[in-house]
Length: 170
Image (cartoon, rainbow, N blue to C red; front, side):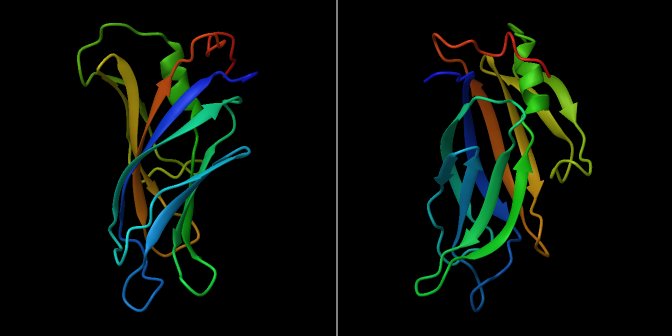
């Protein structure tokens, strides 16, 4: 596909302290949107601390487009309820990938990203060298809701015959 720089593997690990949208619990799933791409996880029944452990793959055309996550409660007879949302700014992570590092010790921290007003991080997030790749695991605070966080991880995948990040300006 024309203009694709590479892929991001997005691992949606788990949610914590999600709000109950049904009587005592929720049936949460995560909608993922980036540009025109839309993906979603499976529904976890009756759980405000769900474990998804799902991997979704997004193609990257523009490094300044954030990954938008919306946690929803699956309802049978009515429209699904939103349970909060968060954005992932991939630029700090891709900056690390672009360094094209090699042979670092397993678990080496390449960069630490601090929570601030422009990101949804609940705590410092690290870009870590693992098995020959840089991974960023993060805990994201959901917006537009009283409580809730989701734990996700991103990993870059180079595509053969694509430009990659070499010519991208940050």
